[in-house]
Length: 262
Image (cartoon, rainbow, N blue to C red; front, side, top):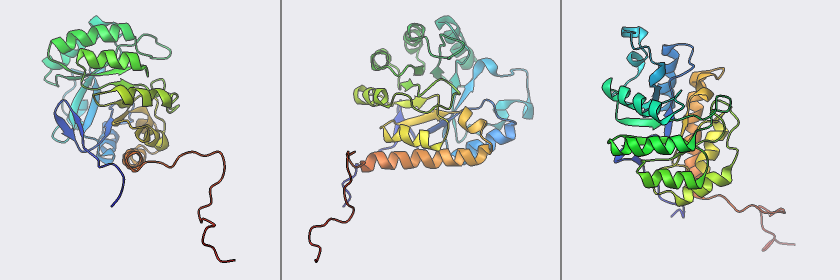
């Protein structure tokens, strides 16, 4: 029998997902490409930036027409908000539009780096949780902030890997490990993934999932990249559960010398 750890499905706020990949809706060349990427990714949750929706669009001109809500759970996103008040208002709008009371809380503090404003994020999270929203907050890769968000009642924590859309991959793997160590809710790495190996590394660190958008939408072949990300997340999870070998400073022969015939 294998000594690897038995896997359990990703469960957030009592909802179980077969995929550990969450995908976005922005920057695609067309809604048709977006839909095909969603299908290739196998994702079961999709983020939608509420403030960037064209609420006047109807039929095929509307982004929502191209999202299969029978297969994918909507996660309205407060992208573009720079204050707690704006983020809370955006969540209320998403609810009024009948999208979902599940929200990806994103309160930015800087236009250049798009790093989250921790103080405003915590402020918004407290209000939204009290109002009955299911909150998944985008945050810094800081274990203290992650603990505070968890204690407020957020159902997951979503530390950044690197600045949004940068494709730099995980800059601080040690911090992700620390967050995973203290977290009692799922840890979903968000922002900065550039290619399949980044997604795999995030999962090998013990993350429960990965959220991405730009890495797929702006790839030379978005549909193929979506498929690669799906496989990378699965492979990274398998590697984490299997347990990697220890790192050593020197070589260790694959074929031991003991028992060899002279």
